Structure formats: C-alpha cells, structure tokens
Image (cartoon, rainbow, N blue to C red; front, side, top):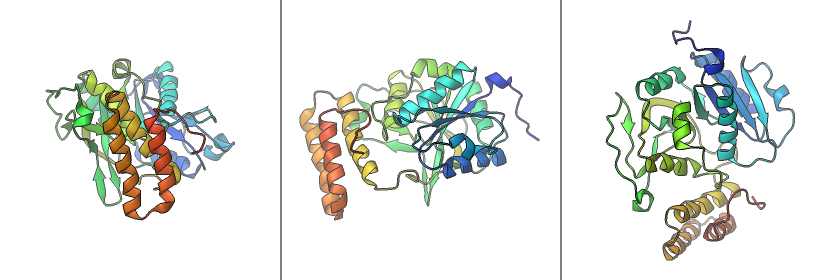
Length: 297
C-alpha cells in the first residue's frame, strides 16, 4: 500500500515521456512505473512518431496515461515543453521529465515531491543515472559555461548536492514544480537533440536558483533510442556544443572556430572515418548558428 499523501487527481505530478521510434522502450517504461512507483501520478507520452498506432501498442501498460501526438518531431526539448504545458494545463503540481528508456530501481517520485515541498526555492531537481558501470549525475564544464553566473549559496538538502555554476544536470531524469516552471521557463528548443538539458540548467543558474542533484538514481543506458555514435548523435552533439557556445559567447568567433576543429580532429584520431562527415556537418551548422531539426539527420 502506498504511504504517499493523497493529491487531487488533477494536481498529481505528471511524468513526461518523449517517445520516438518503436514502442517497446516506452511500454517497458510505463510497465516499470506501474510495478515500482508508489506515488500517485499521471503519465503524459509525447508521441513524436514516426510510426502510427502508439495508443494501441501501449494499451494496458499503465492505468493513467495520455498521449499527445506530434509526428513532425520538433525535438526533445520541444517535446518536454509540449508534455509540461499539457500537464500543467490539467492542474499538475509538478513535472518529472524521464527518458522513455529509463528504468526505476525503486519508488522515486514521492521523494522528489517531498524534497520540492520542503525546498520551494529550488529551480531544478535531478536524479543520478546508472549508465552501465558509471553513476552519472552532473556534467562539469569549463570556464566558458559559467560566464556571468554566480555561486548559489543554498544549504544542500540531506544527501543532496547543490550544483556549482560550472555544472549542469542530466536531462534523462529532471524534475520541476509548477511554481519553479513559471520562473525558469520552458526547455530551450533550438537544439533539437542533445545539450538542451545543459542550456536549461544554465537558465536556472542565470536566475540565481539552486539546482539540486538528489541521492536518488534511475537506470539509464544512454542513446538506446537512436544508437550510440550514430550519425545523428554525432551531428547534433557537435552542432549543439557550438550553438551553446554561441548563445553564451556570441562574439567569440575565433574560439568557436578552434573548438570546432577540435571536435573534427577527435574523429580523425579515433580512426572513425565514417563519423567524420556528420561531425564536419555538425561543426559547419554550429558555426552558422543553424538551429532546430536538420533535414539531413
């Protein structure tokens, strides 16, 4: 029996899943939520296609989920925003953005809700991610990322860590209350795929809001949906790293040029000649500040 406090059905937190591709991973995630998560919640599945029939494929996997379809696939950040707008319009108290290929080890949402209720000033929360033999939580960036940001002097909740301005949270498992959403604003949508979590973290940093990594963890093997080191992954990873640098340092063209050359030479020294074209295309697109979905990838 759940020991979580009862919430009105309309105010229950929403778990946002952005779906793309075959339905197996999304169905597995829904079934895992039913089996493991004890906190009352609703699920919003944002269907980016490309296949039809997702509702039929997910039937019976979870007792309370809605599908919001947009097969134009505007990107992960846009999908998160679609799900959040749908959930908050329905009265949800909070949104937990969870990758559809993630698996819970144990009840998680109730702890996130308790932490958020006790610390309403926090902008963004996240869990650790178990990625194979790695336990990932924050991404640490060099000095370019923290331009204009100040250290947030906020006492860390027990077992948690308050991020430094050089750190960002991982987007596979991020949580925000409705109140914080109104302050931080939506996910950046110009990246399409990759690095939007880093940019969103920086939005919260820039407002002086605490970002907190909790003591919780989920299982998440990266790039299961699109494939690790696929051409798509390599292109958007290269392009978006340059887009974010342009966003923070719009006048430092020479520095971005050298960084782009560094990204290309990495593939050369790895001997991954098949990945050289998407890396080069990504660097050129980032240099030109091209945003959103690229028709080639």
